[in-house]
Amino acid sequence: MDKIFFSTKNLLVWLTSLFVLFVAGCSSGNSSSGKEGETTNEEEKNVTMIFSFKSPNMDPHTGFTPIRTGVTETLLKLDKDSNLEGWLAENWSTKDNITWEFAIRDDITFHDGTKLNAEGVKASLERSMDVNESLSSSLKIKSMEAEGQTLTITTTESYPSLPSELVNPYTSIVNTKAEKKVGVEVFQNAPVGTGPFKVKNFIPNQEVQVSKNDSYWAGEPKIDGATIRFNEDANVRALALQSKEADIVYNLPAEGIEAIGQDKELTVESVAGLRSHFILYNQQSTNVSDVKVRQALNLLIDRKSIADDIMLGHAEPANGPFNSALPFGLEDKIQELNVKKAKELLGEAGYTENAKGLMEKDGKPLTLEMITYKARPELPLIAQLFQSDALKAGVTVEIKNVENADTHLAENTDWDLATYSNNTSPRGDGSYFLNTAFTDTGALNVGKINIPTLNDIIQELNRTTDAEKRTKLTKSAADIINEHVAHSYAVYPNIIVGVNNRVTNWKPTAEEYYILTYTLDVK
Image 1 (cartoon, rainbow, N blue to C red):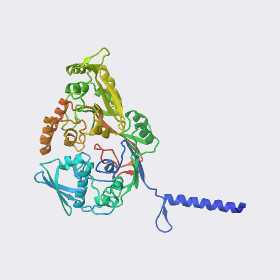
Image 2: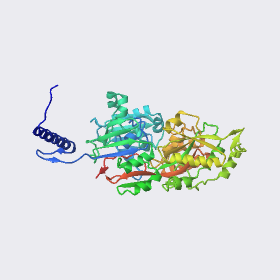
Image 3: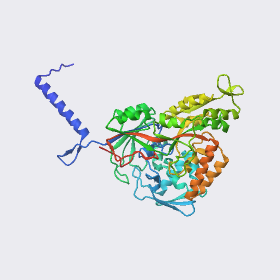
Image 4: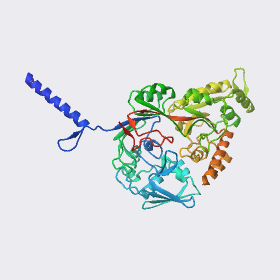
């Protein structure tokens, strides 16, 4: 190999050239060219968010991540007061609550430039019902006809709740023709929607990167893109906000709020939501199939302690499935912790207290498996508090933490109860939760609840249009749920979100659907 010798002059020339290349490289990455001879130093605007639930794919018909990240949209949506308004559908009408006409906006294209029309909406809804069995039941669609920008839907029965059901994120509209071109697996990770952002890169259960849709029909997005990460560890989420690695973080742990609040660059938003934290009972389990046992367990929930000590005031004790502040919420007194009464009810169910202070029947102690998950940081704490109070009544509770509660509860039958959280009135109405959590085809009815009187009321509610009557029916349904202790409602939690003050024109909303919006901006 030939030897190379550097003179001082050659070395200076080489270093100078290297410096020029370095500066040019930096310049090309941080500025954009304008007119000839001019440059602007406008950096791209991006935000980083962290959600608490993992997302195995981006299929909008089986998950909420696509609508939350601004990739997809539905025909109708909720406004800030939880009232229905048009979104991809400009307006809708019906004469008999069976035949419905939806006027699809005429100025919308999918991310790939394909025009949105009624035929495209029809194909998307057909796909959603094919891949999501529960959706087919909740929509009650008998047939659909598409002509130009008009979609006509005929339901199997009088169904005034159809418009609110079309707010469901699972009904997000996508270009199914694009799926046929790229294949199901590719499409599931990068659906072609109509939203202000499109998928740039997706890593299952880790993160999704989106870039702005320059042709977005409602107006150009204010930011260029976003990274949305998934992390179920509440402490990791909180630290990411504090270290400024993330701009918006959902489901912060209540105990971490004080430290975050001391940082002048950060704000904590605690918003009253439409959600309930509760205990699910598996009525396939003989341990909790007796209503007397469920009544006893209901008395072992310290609702005040959960609201004050676990949620640190960012929740209200619950008295039923729907927040008492809603028109269809119950006015019942909040059930207090009552160990003595719980032991009496267990006695009525055939249990006796043994020498060790444990309740048993036929020589077998009452031992319950409780499922919980850490994506919502307060739920494992609620499980631990319940475990402690249950033991005072002689009931042993064994806590099992799982990564994916929905999958575990659906695929297993040997659990007894579970901490759970659900948006019980996401559309300003209780029918969605009643249909999905208590009917035999409901996606949330993992405990196989079957109460004939409740089924009758839900069916009547589905046929009723009068608002006042719907409120009365919903309250009646809630009364029956409490009477049978189908669930045990603990608290109505606030939505706790950490926000970096560089984020502008954005607030968390009660329905938890519309998170990354085209109006969100950064300083």
